[in-house]
Image (cartoon, rainbow, N blue to C red; front, top):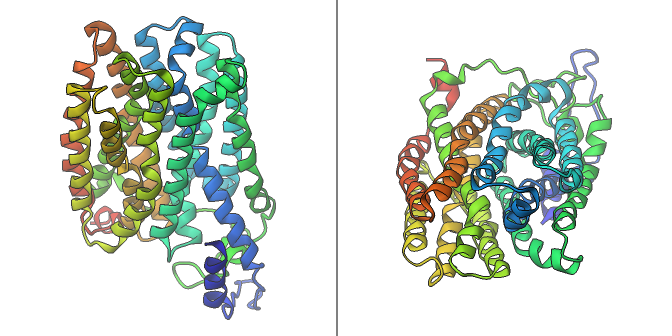
Length: 442
């Protein structure tokens, strides 16, 4: 896949020359084949690291609760930490990208993920566990926001396919952590600490592809990767290295931005409830712990093929509402089955909920489609994701409280199904063919 993409870039950009305001002389572009491959490797490895911290914990949540003495409500708080951190830290990502460049910020995010995962299991208490989790989630938060920016900036003509590749890798990492954490823990001696800490190695590997882009601070992204001129047809400033132009939009004036933020928040609510609690739902219904982890993996792995197909399909449609509705119907069917016969049809329910969870790559794709420039995408991505994750914070916590006080999963599942209705409604609004630049300047 990488070689044809690189050749395509070579053909498209070989004859391009950039003149800076200072010299007005041609600038020789950097070797495009290896930079393109390195960027793709960085995007894939980054995506692989954006969910194992959460789904590996979901697979071992019962062991972690017993070891640290957590109640159901505290465990619910633990499953609410990811969206809280994503909301708090994600809003800083566009500002950090403007100052240091998106590649440098993503590289630092991978360092934070690796460090937090290695420290978290050995802190010895709930407070330390939460603090180390917050460090990991801080790295995930800024990378979450900047991935659409990087795709828009370096691959503006392939937003759908590159978002699909990124989303597919994200789903693969999510599913792999859910599937192999329990058996890997058993192979490594049965210690849940080791089973959680081993994922830090994947985070360390993701640092490497971004290092050349952090070090080369004197060139622009166009010179680094594709030797393209900017959106206005002029060469970017010489010292702008991979920086995102300062946003000038008032995104809060855009109805589409708000619809996209609410859609993102409601799909994130369902996703983090699923990642944090679904394995426990199956275990409480009599399913073996290893099988429950596999069921969670099935839910997550559905995103591997669909996360590549859905963004490409979405970019070909003038309105993404039909995809929103189809995913929502699958979610409602999955929750109904989980309520009526959680063990009897467990594989089918896991499959349906996995299809429904592909609302995430659809939301990312719409972020890239609802703004015209990389600066607009940066601001829209930061607003939609930060606001969305704020909306999603109460969901996992409320599920834990309802589970503890009702003594069963009936009320929590009813809550999940009920949230699917407004998610479908705002998703249809967010899928309309318009841009935030048009709405914000009216």
